[in-house]
Image 1 (cartoon, helix red, strand yellow):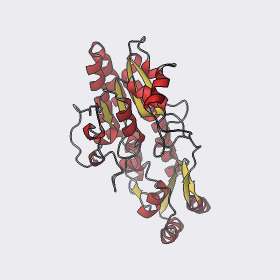
Image 2 (cartoon, rainbow, N blue to C red):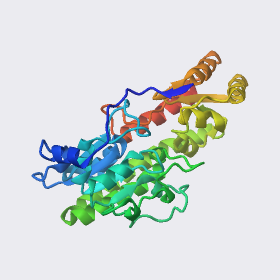
Image 3 (cartoon, rainbow, N blue to C red):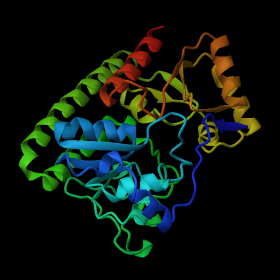
Length: 332
């Protein structure tokens, strides 16, 4: 059986009384009015890192998910989280069911801050258009008034890969949207936000150059991914994801891999077609261990790509480390 290797987070339902109790205590980092900075709240530290890069000295960023032991799929918001959202000037979420806790949190907090949803900047997202001028308003009254209903893509979408932070194009477009929204909130710093976004875009271009270099020498090589987390990045690098869909889907959903699919996967690894295996160390189970051991027995390089930001890294340094690891594995 597959499972996520995550420490349990003790959380409870957030009530009005709980929030009132919090409001009387120490304010969250995003609620400090003395700094004069825009308070940005991100669902994960991945988006927090991106927001910090764009906002620079003029933003104060708080991320809800800051540890690999916290699973965005299963996280339940606390009263402190609700207070953090209440004081936000800008909210950034992933969407498509990945960080579903943000939906109830945004509604319960009563925030009026604009909400940027990363999946809406991905070209594969259903109904995707040019979102450069768009940010969904936060709800003001009820779930029925909320711009993030189940049918606008915030619930899990079958066949859509929600791990869009591994797609350089999506992040570049999201970065532009962050700069635009920050410029509306703090127009006196708009030139700084735009300059920071441009510098970040140049760093994204550097990542794309590294992926192009892989594509030039390794295009068409087959890889096996235990979960679809890195697929946007590997596709950009020209690699062929040969993993049976039923395998990666079962792992992602925390379900058992069907026996026939497991056998197919083991035979694929035994065939000599696979150049690299990529695993997500934050998920796993007996079947993942089995295919990983099979890959190692066949001298197939096995590397790890995580869902959350490793300690001490920025988004750019993390992605470059991933790309370097991939390039080295393909050359092994």
